Length: 296
Image 1 (cartoon, helix red, strand yellow):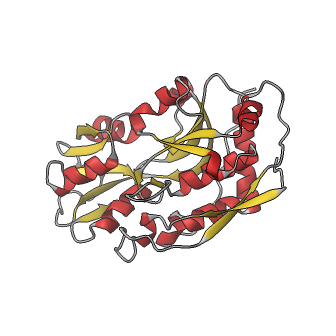
Image 2: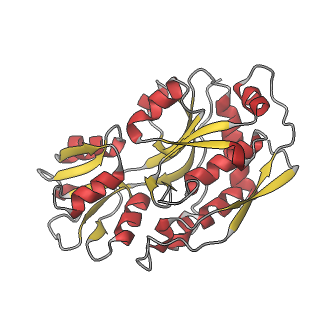
Protein backbone atom coordinates (compact mmCIF):
# COMPACT_ATOMS: atom_id res chain seq x y z
CA UNK A 1 0.00 0.00 0.00
CA UNK A 2 2.97 2.30 -0.54
CA UNK A 3 2.34 5.64 -2.20
CA UNK A 4 5.76 6.28 -3.76
CA UNK A 5 5.99 9.90 -4.72
CA UNK A 6 8.14 12.25 -2.67
CA UNK A 7 10.64 11.39 0.00
CA UNK A 8 11.88 13.20 3.07
CA UNK A 9 15.10 12.92 4.98
CA UNK A 10 14.58 12.33 8.67
CA UNK A 11 17.64 13.33 10.62
CA UNK A 12 17.71 10.86 13.51
CA UNK A 13 19.87 11.37 16.56
CA UNK A 14 21.62 8.20 17.64
CA UNK A 15 19.51 6.59 20.31
CA UNK A 16 21.14 6.55 23.69
CA UNK A 17 20.87 2.82 23.72
CA UNK A 18 23.17 2.75 20.76
CA UNK A 19 26.06 3.56 23.05
CA UNK A 20 25.45 0.70 25.45
CA UNK A 21 28.55 -1.10 24.23
CA UNK A 22 30.85 1.82 24.95
CA UNK A 23 29.09 3.00 28.10
CA UNK A 24 28.44 6.55 26.89
CA UNK A 25 24.67 6.76 26.69
CA UNK A 26 24.48 10.45 27.42
CA UNK A 27 25.93 11.81 24.22
CA UNK A 28 24.39 12.48 20.83
CA UNK A 29 26.73 12.69 17.90
CA UNK A 30 24.91 11.10 14.98
CA UNK A 31 24.21 13.00 11.80
CA UNK A 32 22.85 9.99 9.89
CA UNK A 33 19.59 10.32 7.99
CA UNK A 34 16.84 7.90 7.10
CA UNK A 35 14.56 8.37 4.13
CA UNK A 36 10.88 7.42 4.19
CA UNK A 37 8.11 8.00 1.67
CA UNK A 38 5.56 10.78 1.99
CA UNK A 39 2.48 10.06 -0.10
CA UNK A 40 1.20 12.70 -2.48
CA UNK A 41 -2.62 12.97 -2.19
CA UNK A 42 -3.21 9.41 -0.91
CA UNK A 43 -6.64 7.96 -1.70
CA UNK A 44 -8.63 6.62 1.24
CA UNK A 45 -12.29 5.70 1.61
CA UNK A 46 -14.37 8.78 2.28
CA UNK A 47 -15.24 9.16 5.95
CA UNK A 48 -12.44 6.88 7.14
CA UNK A 49 -10.09 8.08 9.84
CA UNK A 50 -7.20 7.81 7.38
CA UNK A 51 -9.00 10.17 4.99
CA UNK A 52 -9.66 12.63 7.82
CA UNK A 53 -6.03 12.67 8.91
CA UNK A 54 -4.78 13.01 5.34
CA UNK A 55 -7.13 15.92 4.73
CA UNK A 56 -6.11 17.79 7.87
CA UNK A 57 -2.45 17.18 7.10
CA UNK A 58 -1.34 16.61 10.67
CA UNK A 59 -1.34 13.87 13.29
CA UNK A 60 -0.77 13.51 17.03
CA UNK A 61 1.36 10.56 18.05
CA UNK A 62 1.96 9.50 21.64
CA UNK A 63 5.48 8.24 22.38
CA UNK A 64 7.65 7.70 25.41
CA UNK A 65 10.23 10.35 26.34
CA UNK A 66 12.25 8.30 28.83
CA UNK A 67 13.28 5.13 27.01
CA UNK A 68 16.68 5.33 25.26
CA UNK A 69 16.54 3.66 21.86
CA UNK A 70 12.76 3.24 22.00
CA UNK A 71 11.41 6.74 22.59
CA UNK A 72 13.54 9.41 24.22
CA UNK A 73 13.64 13.18 24.36
CA UNK A 74 16.57 14.69 26.17
CA UNK A 75 17.14 18.24 27.32
CA UNK A 76 17.56 20.51 24.33
CA UNK A 77 16.17 18.03 21.83
CA UNK A 78 13.45 19.36 19.53
CA UNK A 79 11.75 16.01 19.05
CA UNK A 80 11.96 12.48 20.45
CA UNK A 81 14.28 9.86 18.98
CA UNK A 82 14.04 6.09 18.91
CA UNK A 83 12.47 3.25 16.98
CA UNK A 84 8.92 4.29 17.94
CA UNK A 85 9.17 7.88 16.63
CA UNK A 86 10.83 6.56 13.47
CA UNK A 87 7.91 4.21 12.89
CA UNK A 88 5.55 7.11 13.54
CA UNK A 89 7.19 9.06 10.71
CA UNK A 90 6.84 6.08 8.37
CA UNK A 91 3.13 5.79 9.16
CA UNK A 92 2.51 9.52 8.92
CA UNK A 93 4.22 9.55 5.54
CA UNK A 94 1.71 7.03 4.17
CA UNK A 95 -1.05 9.45 5.22
CA UNK A 96 0.66 12.20 3.24
CA UNK A 97 1.81 13.93 6.42
CA UNK A 98 5.26 15.50 6.56
CA UNK A 99 7.40 14.93 9.69
CA UNK A 100 7.15 18.63 10.55
CA UNK A 101 3.38 18.19 10.85
CA UNK A 102 3.57 15.45 13.48
CA UNK A 103 2.75 16.59 16.99
CA UNK A 104 4.62 14.39 19.45
CA UNK A 105 2.82 13.91 22.76
CA UNK A 106 4.63 12.48 25.77
CA UNK A 107 2.79 9.33 26.76
CA UNK A 108 3.41 7.17 29.83
CA UNK A 109 2.28 3.58 30.28
CA UNK A 110 -0.66 4.49 32.49
CA UNK A 111 -2.32 6.93 30.08
CA UNK A 112 -2.00 5.13 26.76
CA UNK A 113 -5.58 3.82 26.70
CA UNK A 114 -7.14 7.07 28.01
CA UNK A 115 -5.22 9.11 25.42
CA UNK A 116 -6.66 6.96 22.63
CA UNK A 117 -10.15 6.84 24.10
CA UNK A 118 -10.49 10.59 24.60
CA UNK A 119 -8.72 11.68 21.41
CA UNK A 120 -5.65 13.24 23.04
CA UNK A 121 -3.61 11.43 20.39
CA UNK A 122 -4.40 9.70 17.10
CA UNK A 123 -1.86 6.91 17.57
CA UNK A 124 0.19 5.49 20.43
CA UNK A 125 3.60 4.06 19.53
CA UNK A 126 5.13 3.76 22.98
CA UNK A 127 6.63 0.31 23.68
CA UNK A 128 2.96 -0.68 23.75
CA UNK A 129 2.74 -4.44 24.33
CA UNK A 130 -0.21 -6.09 22.63
CA UNK A 131 -2.54 -7.88 25.04
CA UNK A 132 -6.06 -9.30 24.83
CA UNK A 133 -7.09 -7.03 27.70
CA UNK A 134 -5.93 -3.89 25.92
CA UNK A 135 -7.60 -4.96 22.71
CA UNK A 136 -10.90 -5.00 24.55
CA UNK A 137 -10.45 -1.27 25.18
CA UNK A 138 -8.51 0.13 22.19
CA UNK A 139 -7.20 -1.02 18.84
CA UNK A 140 -3.69 -2.43 18.49
CA UNK A 141 -1.99 -3.30 15.20
CA UNK A 142 1.21 -5.27 14.92
CA UNK A 143 3.50 -6.49 16.29
CA UNK A 144 6.31 -4.52 14.69
CA UNK A 145 8.91 -5.55 17.30
CA UNK A 146 9.23 -8.42 19.76
CA UNK A 147 11.37 -8.22 22.89
CA UNK A 148 11.39 -9.75 26.37
CA UNK A 149 11.15 -8.69 29.99
CA UNK A 150 14.46 -8.49 31.88
CA UNK A 151 15.89 -7.17 35.16
CA UNK A 152 18.13 -4.22 36.02
CA UNK A 153 19.97 -4.38 39.36
CA UNK A 154 22.86 -2.74 41.15
CA UNK A 155 26.23 -3.75 39.72
CA UNK A 156 27.38 -5.13 43.08
CA UNK A 157 24.16 -7.08 43.77
CA UNK A 158 24.72 -10.81 43.31
CA UNK A 159 21.48 -11.83 45.03
CA UNK A 160 19.34 -11.33 41.91
CA UNK A 161 20.30 -13.27 38.82
CA UNK A 162 16.86 -13.90 37.35
CA UNK A 163 13.13 -13.71 38.12
CA UNK A 164 13.31 -16.73 40.43
CA UNK A 165 15.26 -14.54 42.89
CA UNK A 166 12.57 -11.85 43.17
CA UNK A 167 10.42 -13.33 45.93
CA UNK A 168 10.13 -10.64 48.60
CA UNK A 169 12.29 -8.19 46.66
CA UNK A 170 11.05 -4.68 45.86
CA UNK A 171 10.87 -4.32 42.11
CA UNK A 172 10.05 -1.12 40.25
CA UNK A 173 8.26 -0.64 36.96
CA UNK A 174 5.73 1.82 35.61
CA UNK A 175 2.10 1.82 36.60
CA UNK A 176 -0.12 0.20 34.01
CA UNK A 177 2.64 -1.96 32.52
CA UNK A 178 2.48 -5.71 31.99
CA UNK A 179 5.96 -6.05 33.51
CA UNK A 180 4.99 -5.05 37.04
CA UNK A 181 2.05 -7.48 37.03
CA UNK A 182 4.29 -10.33 35.89
CA UNK A 183 6.91 -10.02 38.65
CA UNK A 184 4.23 -9.62 41.33
CA UNK A 185 1.87 -12.38 40.26
CA UNK A 186 4.35 -14.95 38.96
CA UNK A 187 7.49 -14.35 41.03
CA UNK A 188 6.31 -12.92 44.36
CA UNK A 189 7.98 -9.52 44.09
CA UNK A 190 6.83 -6.49 46.04
CA UNK A 191 5.78 -4.01 43.34
CA UNK A 192 6.82 -0.36 43.36
CA UNK A 193 4.96 1.55 40.68
CA UNK A 194 6.03 4.92 39.26
CA UNK A 195 4.97 7.00 36.27
CA UNK A 196 8.20 6.66 34.30
CA UNK A 197 11.16 4.31 33.98
CA UNK A 198 13.47 7.22 34.72
CA UNK A 199 11.94 7.40 38.19
CA UNK A 200 12.46 3.67 38.63
CA UNK A 201 16.06 4.06 37.52
CA UNK A 202 16.57 6.79 40.13
CA UNK A 203 14.99 4.61 42.81
CA UNK A 204 17.42 1.81 42.00
CA UNK A 205 20.41 4.12 42.03
CA UNK A 206 19.52 5.46 45.48
CA UNK A 207 18.84 1.99 46.89
CA UNK A 208 15.09 2.39 47.44
CA UNK A 209 14.27 -0.65 45.28
CA UNK A 210 16.09 -3.90 44.57
CA UNK A 211 15.49 -4.07 40.84
CA UNK A 212 13.79 -2.48 37.86
CA UNK A 213 11.94 -4.57 35.31
CA UNK A 214 10.73 -3.91 31.80
CA UNK A 215 11.80 -4.85 28.29
CA UNK A 216 15.47 -5.71 27.93
CA UNK A 217 16.12 -3.17 25.19
CA UNK A 218 15.04 -0.35 27.49
CA UNK A 219 17.08 -1.57 30.46
CA UNK A 220 20.28 -1.75 28.43
CA UNK A 221 19.98 1.97 27.84
CA UNK A 222 19.88 2.73 31.54
CA UNK A 223 22.74 0.34 32.28
CA UNK A 224 24.79 2.12 29.64
CA UNK A 225 24.24 5.45 31.38
CA UNK A 226 25.65 4.06 34.65
CA UNK A 227 27.86 1.09 33.71
CA UNK A 228 29.71 1.10 37.02
CA UNK A 229 26.53 1.11 39.08
CA UNK A 230 23.95 -0.93 37.15
CA UNK A 231 23.75 -4.17 35.20
CA UNK A 232 21.15 -6.23 33.33
CA UNK A 233 20.94 -9.82 34.58
CA UNK A 234 19.41 -13.10 33.48
CA UNK A 235 17.63 -14.16 30.32
CA UNK A 236 14.38 -12.56 29.11
CA UNK A 237 11.44 -14.21 30.83
CA UNK A 238 8.48 -12.99 28.83
CA UNK A 239 7.56 -12.06 25.31
CA UNK A 240 6.50 -8.48 24.69
CA UNK A 241 4.95 -7.78 21.29
CA UNK A 242 5.01 -4.05 20.52
CA UNK A 243 2.00 -2.72 18.62
CA UNK A 244 0.58 0.57 17.38
CA UNK A 245 -2.46 1.75 19.34
CA UNK A 246 -5.38 3.48 17.66
CA UNK A 247 -8.85 4.68 18.65
CA UNK A 248 -11.53 2.04 19.20
CA UNK A 249 -13.81 4.32 17.18
CA UNK A 250 -11.70 3.85 14.05
CA UNK A 251 -11.40 0.09 13.43
CA UNK A 252 -10.56 0.78 9.78
CA UNK A 253 -7.14 1.96 10.97
CA UNK A 254 -6.12 -1.63 11.69
CA UNK A 255 -5.68 -2.75 8.09
CA UNK A 256 -4.00 0.50 7.08
CA UNK A 257 -1.49 0.19 9.93
CA UNK A 258 -0.91 -3.51 9.32
CA UNK A 259 -0.27 -2.94 5.62
CA UNK A 260 2.03 0.00 6.33
CA UNK A 261 4.09 -1.97 8.86
CA UNK A 262 4.35 -4.94 6.48
CA UNK A 263 5.46 -2.63 3.68
CA UNK A 264 8.11 -1.15 6.01
CA UNK A 265 9.43 -4.67 6.63
CA UNK A 266 9.42 -5.54 2.94
CA UNK A 267 11.00 -2.41 1.47
CA UNK A 268 13.68 -1.82 4.10
CA UNK A 269 12.18 1.22 5.85
CA UNK A 270 11.97 -0.63 9.15
CA UNK A 271 15.57 -1.79 8.77
CA UNK A 272 16.60 1.83 8.24
CA UNK A 273 14.68 2.90 11.33
CA UNK A 274 16.18 0.10 13.41
CA UNK A 275 19.74 0.79 12.29
CA UNK A 276 19.38 4.45 13.28
CA UNK A 277 18.13 3.57 16.77
CA UNK A 278 18.32 0.17 18.46
CA UNK A 279 20.83 -1.05 15.91
CA UNK A 280 23.42 1.40 17.26
CA UNK A 281 23.93 -0.96 20.19
CA UNK A 282 25.34 -3.56 17.85
CA UNK A 283 22.09 -5.53 17.59
CA UNK A 284 21.19 -6.85 14.17
CA UNK A 285 17.79 -6.12 12.66
CA UNK A 286 15.48 -8.81 14.04
CA UNK A 287 13.48 -11.11 11.82
CA UNK A 288 10.19 -9.45 10.99
CA UNK A 289 7.42 -10.88 13.18
CA UNK A 290 4.20 -12.15 11.66
CA UNK A 291 1.54 -9.46 11.93
CA UNK A 292 -1.78 -10.22 13.56
CA UNK A 293 -4.80 -10.32 11.30
CA UNK A 294 -7.37 -7.56 11.68
CA UNK A 295 -10.87 -8.50 12.67
CA UNK A 296 -13.23 -8.28 9.73
